[in-house]
Amino acid sequence: MIFPEKLLCVELEVEKEKLEDVVERLGRWGFFHLKTQKDKLFFFEEETTLSQLKTISQFLKIPPAPPQKAKAKLSKEEVKRLYREILKLKEELTHIKRERELLNLAEKIDKSFDGNVSKLLKSLKVITFKAGTIKKEILDSLQLSLKSEKLYAAFAPLYHGDIAVIIFFPPNREYLFEKIKSSFNLNPVPLKYFKEETKEEIESKERFIKQKIEEIKKHYGEKIASLCTLLEIKKKITKAESSAFEKEGKKVLRGWIPEKKKEEFLKLFNDCNVKFYPPGENPPTLIQTPSPLKPIEEIVFSYSYPSYYDINPVLPFVVVFTLLFGVMFGDVGHGLILSAFAILLEKKGKKAIGRLMLLSGISSSLFGILYGSAFGKEIFHPLLFSPMKSIKPLLILSIGIGIAVITIGFIIKLLSSVHRENLEQIIFDEEGILSFSTYWLSLGILIKALVFKMNVKLELLILLILLLASFFYAFRKTKQAATSLIDAVRILLENLINTLSFMRLGAFALAHGALFFAIFTIAESVKTLKGGTLIYWIVVVLGNLLVVALEGLIVTIQALRLNYYEFFKKFYRGGGRPFKPFKLEVLECEPF
Image (cartoon, rainbow, N blue to C red; front, side, top):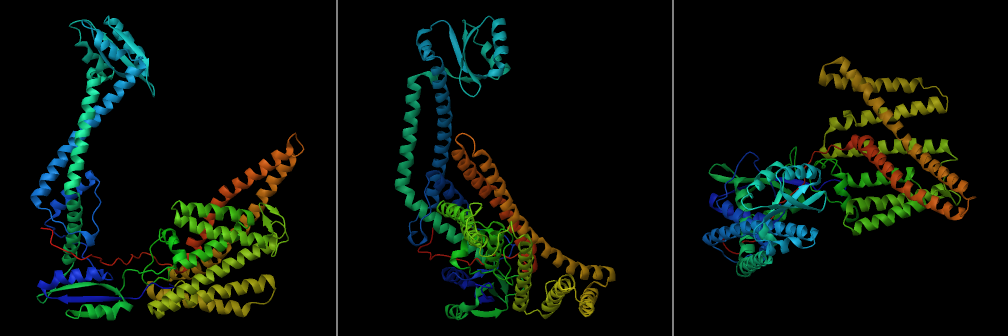
């Protein structure tokens, strides 16, 4: 839970003819993270068939079969024939869709003319007409053009600024329609779409295609789903086999397994030559986060996925984030509102945001009890202090939390360095023992000199020695005196400035109280008006909701910033990749 699961690097040496069998067994076991060769391409001979099957299954909306039930066979010839048939059906459906669009547009045009278009089709014998739509802004220009050509037209508003148009043509003058269409960007609707028989014909085609689709699904659905699954499994095996390299006439697979699975692995692959190695510099990371905090991984890992040698950052993130949120947004009522909204978000599937908001709401309510605040009012005696009445203690609390958070960051980094068994990093790293000692000694000097007004000459001498040690270590690596000196001083100042950044906790807690002071002042000022009591409560309720929404968002951003820049910077390396074991179900039969 604290550190990622311990892994072992494994080298599996097998005979060439046994490679497929070993890969299948690894897939069934499901705890082997295969080390792939990124630049190596692999060829899957059934790729074309699989691609055709995916096209068929997507069109027919057939989900892949569960691997344990994928048993049916289907020949390549049948797949090709079905693929051609599906392509033809897709083409027909595309054509029908366009016809349906024209039919719907014809119905709208006819309706805009009170059904007279379909009547004209039956009644007119000598004079012909054309129908379509144009943009409203072109109407005047079109009318002038029609007038110059001595043509009669009727217009009716349609929708979204479009105009329905009917243009009448005397005998032998229909040729003018093409000129009008291109000049005025007229969208024509063929007259056949105004006829009832056309609608019946389109509906008949649709019924035929739907019937054909259902027939294909009935006869081939199970086979398509099964073969699609089987080929996907076969492709996984082929890809895994391509990761093997040759060594003295044998095939070798490399990867990682959890250390606790070592004995189980040896029993399952006792017919292979197995070698174990340390996990190396960049192994995958297998994180075991407690289930209540599991959804929050999505938020934390969006910053960067933890490396194998990092501590699991979820628990430190949650503890620090909720603490900072509560300090800045301490209010019993607002915390309960956030918690209720968080539960609603979780029910809607927003588990990551919902879970973090729920914990933040609880923290807000707890600090509300310490501050004596509920819905912006100090309605009971605070267990700690009221932020608006105790500014100095509030700022001291903020700095104290900053020191604690940065100290925790140092300790976590030291634990990570111990986990890596890197003595040099433990002592001399930017977040090592030397830097940690310099930080706490600097704090002691500031407190002793500024608060207690005591002599700090000895402490300053010790601080100088520690800074010189940092300088000489950096100089040994860089061979640049100026850069080394700047780095030694920079690390010290950076830690102190990061501590001062936590003063924003007190600033936002004060802002929270000040906002409600303003809201209740406004509410009291309107209470004397007619209906003042009702207006008072409207102002109070709306003010509370506004503060919860806006200030809650701002406080969240600030808590994230302090987490990522002041806290995570101390210990979190990131840049890792998740442990993804090669998983495979048993192939019940060969695809072909």
